[in-house]
Image (cartoon, rainbow, N blue to C red):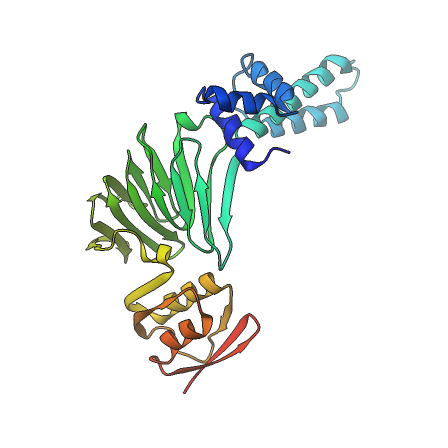
Length: 300
């Protein structure tokens, strides 16, 4: 099984983007000969537009229920099934995706095949097509990440609530199921919501989705605060603050007894759970009891 680093080399090889030194490293892999055969075989077929799995199932069904009095030559059909199965395997190999996940309480640095870098915040997942990267520089994000994109063809970040298009820039995206916030730290980005609202952001600009409307904002810091181990909030529902603490410390709150709609202004750091809890809960008049990874909350 190839490591993620070797997978990156293989993707760059298919894009003819390997240096001479990287190509020699790839050729040294024991899997190189097999992968070379597969790549050479790709020249003899086009990816089918029909559902191969369904086609195989239909063929097998016909084998199981032959028409009365009709002689079926099994060998050509078996050859066809074998060939189709091989195509399925090749497509599965070359059209699957690579995923990177930062678990709760962790952050993860990712380098994409074109050299673009991504810093994933806690409880976030990034995925992209494994091969043919230069033909479609697109990633899918569920969570929060800071991007440094190399120059080249269009680069797109897709989230559940909207997408971001860039050429070469630095920007932060928070794209969770109930949040969509984009901040531009260098260059220029185009932000589009799922309802086709669009805004162009330049350095220092930000936008957030509120009640399905993109609202313009400003940022003054040079990098997102979460990369320095801190979160700040301005009149944000307590529920979202508690969600972020859970992600950063890999804990779970029992919140049934408190009002999560009350607004919180302040922040917490990622280094000390006790200090983080007191920074948020004490000003809100909430008591807490820590039991392992569970934190019970109650009003004072």
